[in-house]
Image (tube, rainbow, N blue to C red):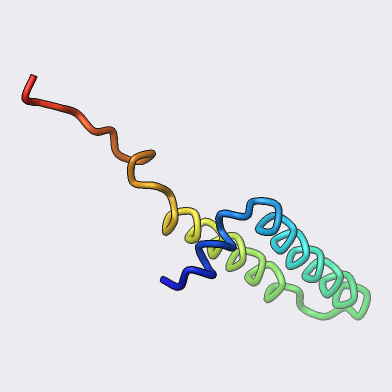
Length: 75
C-alpha cells in the first residue's frame, strides 16, 4: 500500500474533513435530484461506498498490536 494513503489515514483531521466534504457533496447532489423529482438511489449507494472505503482504510492501517494481544505463553 502506498505510504501517502497511510499518511492520509493517520492524519485524522484531514481524513474527517475529506469524508465530510464527500458526504456534503452527495447531499447537495441529492437535494438537486429530489427537487427535480429524479431517482436518488445512486446517491444513497455512493454514501454506502464512501463509508465502506473509510472503514476499509481503518482495517488496512490499524496497528496489529492494537488488534492482537501478545501473550507470553512460556511463563
